Image 1 (tube, rainbow, N blue to C red):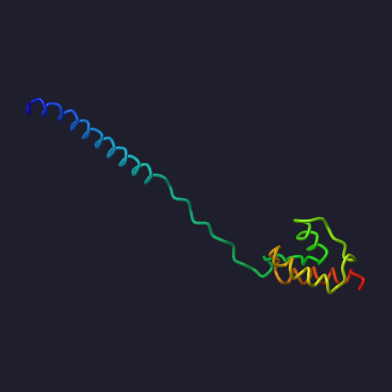
Image 2: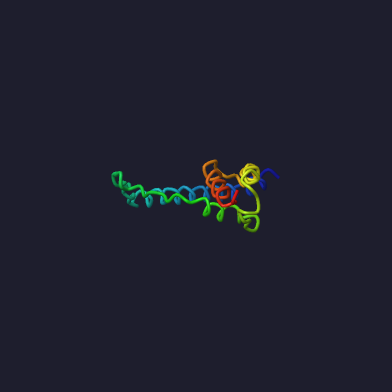
Length: 117
């Protein structure tokens, strides 16, 4: 019985060694091919000048209103509420719409000026 067991384990061991040899040869081949591949030259950035940064156009209150407020509901006319009511509404809507303070102030200024009160 021991003799039969030793005969069946030899092909397994031989197959294991053969698999190990194939893996080692493929790995060494990959290393050799990778060593022959030239590495790309590092990209250099041009020196920064003061003229490189374009100026951003400042959006008006009306443009900001059209961009932000119309995302969720139809446009409201500025004359629908007075300036005090617009201030209360903008405080609430600034939080809901996650508006930056400067943009909310521009929108409020636009609405209050056009409210007629």
